[in-house]
Every structure is written in C-alpha cells, then in structure tokens.
View (cartoon, rainbow, N blue to C red):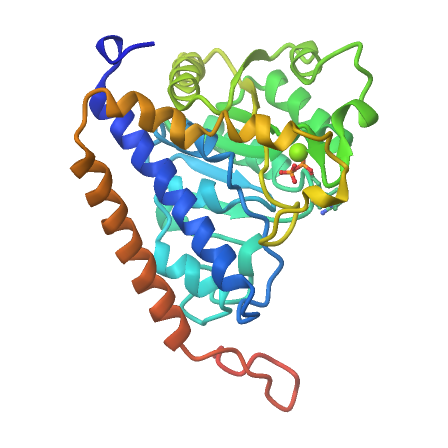
Length: 325
Ligand SMILES: Cc1ncc(C[n+]2csc(CCOP(=O)(O)OP(=O)(O)O)c2C)c(N)n1
Ligand SMILES: [Mg+2]
C-alpha cells in the first residue's frame, strides 16, 4: 500500500495512538522494577495496532471490555492517563480508586466498562451489555477484547451462541498472539480447525486479519461496525499478533525457550509501530515524529510524577485501606 491510496491523517492518528501506548508501556516497564507499583502487570508491547485500530472506530458511548492485558484498550478508548498511572500505584485518585491495579481498570466516562483477569470473565458481561443496548434500542456497540486463551473457556462459546441467537450489537475481538502464558496454541487446540472456524461455526460473521497492520485492523473494524449497525448481528475478529515481553511483568523471557528460537525476532520485524512510521515517513517530515514523541513523553512524565506524589494506600487497624472513605 502506498501513501497515495490511504488517508495520511487517519494513519497519523493511528500511529500516534500506537506510539503513545508503546511509550506508556515502556515507561511502566522501566518504573516497574522499582517495586512501587505493587500489582501484576501484563504489558501489550507488540500488540498496539489492535487497540488503536479497533478503538478508532468507536464512539465514547460504545462500551469496551477487556481482560488482564488491557492497558492499550483502555488508553485507545480514551481512558485518562493520569488516572490510569495513579491506579497502578494504588492511589485513591486512580481510575478504579486504587482498588484494582493493572488488571481491574474501569472508566465509565470513557466507555471503558471494565477489565478483569479471569480469562474470559468479561465476555458474558459484554454480551449482557449488548443485550441491554438491544432491549433499550440505543445505538451503542459493545466490544470485548480477549486472547486466544479464551477458546479454552466454555463461557466464550456460550456467549457466542447467545449473541448470535439474539443478534446482539457486539464485536468480539480475539487477539491471537499464539500463546496462553507458556503454552502454544497448537498444544491447546486441534490444528484441524482454526479459532475463526470455531467462531464462524456459531453462525457469527467472522473475519481474520493481520493484527500488526493498523490500517487493516481499522478497515476490518469499520466494516464490522457497519454490519452490526445494520442490525445484522455480532461480528467476530481473529487478529494475529505477538507479545514481545514475558506474559506478566516488565522483562523479556526468551531465555525460557518456550517460544521457538527466532520467533520473537521475526515478529519484532513486523512491529506495528514501525510499519506505520515507515509509511508516514514517505510524506511527513522528521519534525512531526520528534514533536509527537516529545509531547507524549512529557504527558507520561507528568502522569508518573502525579502518581508518585499521591497518598499511597495504608492499612488501618481493621486491615482496611485507610485512605478510602
Ligand atoms: C479462568 C482462568 N484460568 C486461568 C487463568 C490464568 N491465566 C492468566 S492469563 C492466562 C493466559 C491467557 O492467554 P490469552 O487469553 O491468550 O491472553 P494473552 O495473555 O496471550 O494476552 C492464564 C491461563 C486465569 N486468570 N483465569
Ligand atoms: Mg494469547
């Protein structure tokens, strides 16, 4: 694809969103080692295009749900950065009032209903939210992001059946990064049928795509939302991508050898952020890139400074967090 055939403004926005997520995740990884953030943290470095491309097509009122690897989804949906970083530090002004940490993020003002670490746990909640929209006749769409690991959870299949039966306005987004913790997909699922085939066997319109190509994700999502808004029922997306860091935490874990040698590097070559920047560099000056990075880094610095200054949770004599009324 060349810059002639795409809208530069759209790509620049998608790129900015991905870069912002990347830089925020990198800052969290750097700060995490100081052990001031005391919540398990699943970073989405390498997977940013899915969050950016899907959320680019959503309105603030659309409802997003996610799981343990939710940072990118929250940020792309318009969640507040200061409140998010504060949440990681357990501050009372965090988006979940400091109770939730990285894996329980919520921000109703941004239409980010919630994320929980129970694998598959938010899928039926999203179906319920879509059913509510259907019953009320509002125009909202519910979107749920989840990993390939959810295919081992019965509730996913129950939710797909229910969503199809009631023709619900819901977009299922499976981020297939080929692993559930240390276990490859091919050790968990028969290779005689793909995730997309299983989803489509529920009668749901199913599309697959390169989850590291933000323009493709944006385009597929646009088409999916058109389908949903015409009252044609749910859509299921299987988007292929790859997690760069360890399953949980700020480090690389390639030395554990659960991924074939060279696999991580081959995916790094397909970096979604680089891919978009290469296209943009055909048209935009280096100043654009420098300025953008400066702005994002300054926003991040401020968010960490604020979070570090806020009162931290302390236990009272009853063992409760004392800074909550
Ligand atoms: C019901 C349940 N079973 C097991 C776990 C432990 N667990 C946490 S994350 C995870 C892997 C999920 O993999 P996937 O859904 O592919 O998401 P990814 O981490 O690859 O983004 C597992 C098994 C859990 N949190 N909940
Ligand atoms: Mg996975």
